[in-house]
Length: 217
Image (cartoon, rainbow, N blue to C red; front, side, top):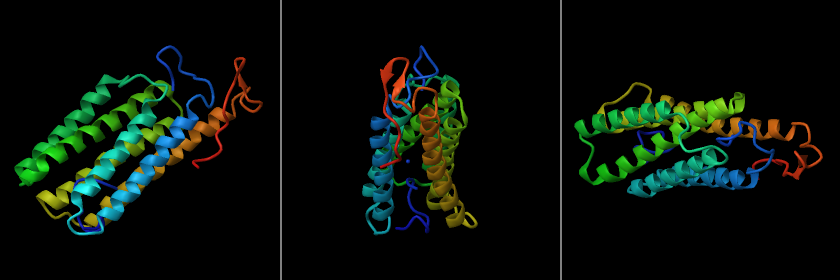
């Protein structure tokens, strides 16, 4: 089952509570590892969806990708600092799940899809709360990417389980790629801005050593 042809509901990716400006590079290595794992899991999910009967494998791959993104967005930021964002994403997820259930979501998929919906809602809420704490263009690009993930999966699920959507492949794929690009590009911008702060270039920040971002890999 390819993403380009109504794939299942999946697919398609600092401040401390005490300070909105963490030390440059403080969590970069952990962030880079999680970001790489998220992209690798997304790629695995896309590959699984190319083959019939691999829906669950694809679902698990993308669920792992969102858990990795959630880990990235949790670094140096409290859990769900914007409770309004959490309430909103959970409401959207619950509404979409109810819609799918009412339109014939197979019984065997109800549990796995519910878990996926919950995780992607948490991921998007954490990204939005993170942006509200950190500020900056990069953080808001990441939050926009998380929102595009929810949109892409909602379109995909509607097309697969409820009704045919016009130009479904175009809209599902375009929102998916927008999500991935915004998350990665925004994340790279954040770390580039961090490295450019005074004291980052010589490996110090407020008297301590720091790491300098050197790219995704």
